[in-house]
Length: 235
Image (cartoon, rainbow, N blue to C red; front, top):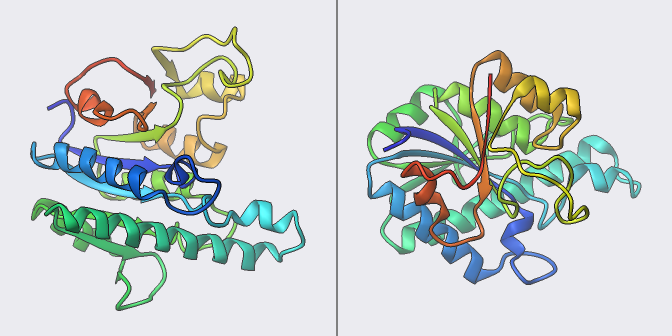
């Protein structure tokens, strides 16, 4: 296996699938199947999933919501997505735990680094929800934090784009894809891989990021098998 322990960052927007809002059961099932495939290989898996398919705090604040309350609503959206993914994984026999950054038992177990690592070592998929538990921090930053805390080998950022490009490939057909790129170049070029706080955290703590298209079935296993289908962001 290419990596033994990973932090998988999933996009909330991707969960919408072909719908304009909410959770597409088919996309959710596809994600669960891909996760099971590498779980069965013995990979230790931590997951952070965004909430943009339900509510995004920053866009809410632009429409008149108080920023703190908007971010708290976004945290709740990530919990809903985490519970959905947990249910989908459980339905196909993958044991898992939802851990929350804010106390809300019995919905999820309150996050603790040592309990998370213990669960990963015991073969559980750990789904980390509610971001960092603080406003003004995105789920990108939450992913960086959790990846660093659980001592992951890599953060796998599963998106609908197959890597990092010189520009947005959905808007600019001349955009060129990077096979690999340094954190510094990402920051210097202003590329929107993740938010700046998340990139800086990964840089400071030497956590590599691999960006790939999670929406194509089988791609997660291809990454674990070492196929170069995305972009590696590294020191």
